[in-house]
Image (tube, rainbow, N blue to C red; front, side, top):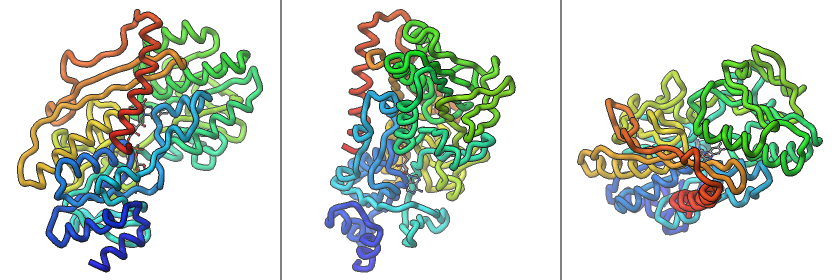
Length: 423
Ligand SMILES: Cc1cc2nc3c(=O)[nH]c(=O)nc-3n(C[C@H](O)[C@H](O)[C@H](O)COP(=O)(O)OP(=O)(O)OC[C@H]3O[C@@H](n4cnc5c(N)ncnc54)[C@H](O)[C@@H]3O)c2cc1C
């Protein structure tokens, strides 16, 4: 037991001393061990829900960063409406719930031996593993856009320094400058995210640099909540914001970070500030564990979220191929709770029931103008599919009072979802 404890302390485990000791004691009694990799909306929620559902299970959450920086509402930080600390959370409450929090990068998974290797050496044995690593950028998939280019042309698709870089570039841009956003093909994290970002940057330009313009170059012809966004743009940002779809030459084929030029089949767009939202894939550990397929994402069983490629490993959140469910924080939360219940049931030797999952997503078009989409999903034919007749978007003819109310609800939504993961 002493050796186990020393190993955990070496990892810099962010837990109380008693919580750090708990797994060793549980192991000695033969309690099942679950390791969760990735402490974002999916992983942190799953670890806590599992402790609640099955207090006998020893749960270890492996997370590389001491604080989590949330992406939802980070577009408001870019638009100068919110500060980054409002997006940041620690793992203190997760640890207080009896989850052992290991602050380390998981670098390897041995699916046969059932163990996870951490960057500085130790191995964590597991009975079941949950991978929730979020996304990685496909560096180089868009010619000219690599890690070095992101220092000039931020993606800001993982919140933190990149979010602040884009905000600073907008603040120092001359009035009259052109902002260009490149939106990726499906699938990608947060389908309405690029359009919310364009809206809040347009709001910043309208109020602070009114001679400026914004263009969205899109690799798609349709996008999430499209009619609602376009109606709001026509009302709030006429002549300021232009959307160029795939069929009108929107697909960006290369990026020149030195000159801030985005190249399409139809020409070059020279920006004063450029924001490239690049193609993405599941976080690297998914590939290392052998749970990602050739698409870069992870096929899962829709009842248990167990990988279709590796037994005993579950994948939740953005990394998973979740059928009709979008890659959103709310979807990650919903999947985390279903997966936690399924893992507890499987460890008890029973069969998990077929679940129903929910997604709700708010987007801000202006500080006092919100729109939303909701969906309900269930396993159908081996995938997660829409429950017929459920879900929908905000009404297109709603009065401004309703849009104002939805903007307030967006903030309430954020508090609820972050409280379930970290609060
Ligand atoms: C601009 C923007 C706006 C958004 N707005 C919304 C919104 O309004 N509503 C909404 O529902 N969603 C929104 N999203 C989407 C949402 O942020 C993601 O869907 C959500 O974060 C996915 O959760 P996750 O747990 O899968 O991944 P993440 O939240 O990214 O968490 C993954 C965690 O895993 C850790 N990790 C990864 N690999 C390892 C490893 N090998 N070892 C240890 N730790 C590891 C990372 O450090 C990270 O903390 C937005 C996204 C963006 C970019």
